[in-house]
Length: 300
Image 1 (cartoon, rainbow, N blue to C red):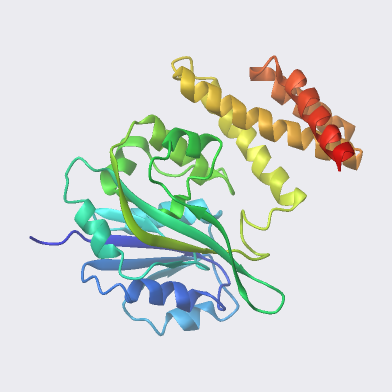
Image 2: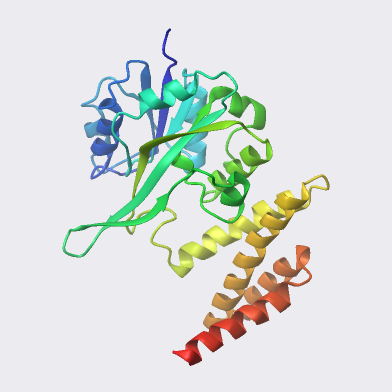
């Protein structure tokens, strides 16, 4: 049986320190039907000379409007039946492509996923393991709405993008959540494999890890846009509506607190309005959350 081609898409901008490891993690798979597409946003730090050392790569370089625009460009170039997305500072587990391809032998399988691990380094240079993703028995809709679906630990059949569309490039930090919500709502059939599929590397330059208040506010602002879009759909299933409403309530409540703390009353008012728009009980939930926090602090 001919093995399906796997296309790996990596968006990249000024990642000279990490890009080689990402590239090597794909090359080391030993899977013959692989293409690795690098969409570079115009690096100026030595990334491009490093990529030039790997003639098997398909590299394009030039301005783009963000990571998700780069992913869409990669999708337009990809020739594989199976698509995976590798960040320029992360890497794949060892020899997992064969297991992925095997799981896709079932023609009804639309996606394949496996475990993922988030790691970082201490001040002394030691590797510190953090959050771990175990997709077995997980609720995909809950992960996509209020959890972490660990998007990069997924491989998708090309037909998924033809069915539900590509990434919303108007979003710059949370378009993978928006895509995974659409994917979950399509009620896909997917397979889970046992190996460790993906290794996230946490550092100060990570897009969503190392979550400062400023980063959270960027993410939450896009979550408000995303949740408005879904919650405005009249035919949205009730379980999905409840979960997506929870995401909106959670983020607007935290943004409200951050805004009050910084003295930004107009933004706090906007957060309250956004929270109340689809959740009339938002204010009561906020009071309950604040009361619980105060009681916990007093108990300490």
